[in-house]
Image (cartoon, rainbow, N blue to C red):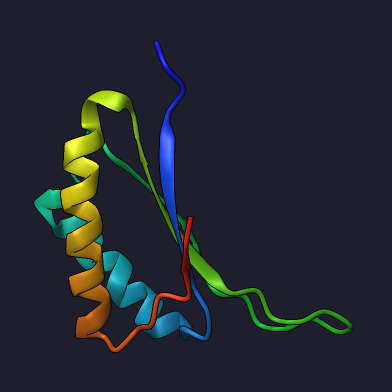
Length: 91
């Protein structure tokens, strides 16, 4: 069995409300159904002496789910455009 892979989307400057809307859409969209997993890191405001932390979404999949993950990645981009969210980096 191979280790899971992931595609991480960094979402610089997204606010908490928009992040929640994006996450809500992801969780109700069949493109993100199992065996895919979504790992979400919401934006965090700045703490004294530290900068704010940007949000990220990671799409986790195994080799058997690669085709589904690619389709889900395209769907995620569409959802992001709906809310005017720019994806700053993909890893």
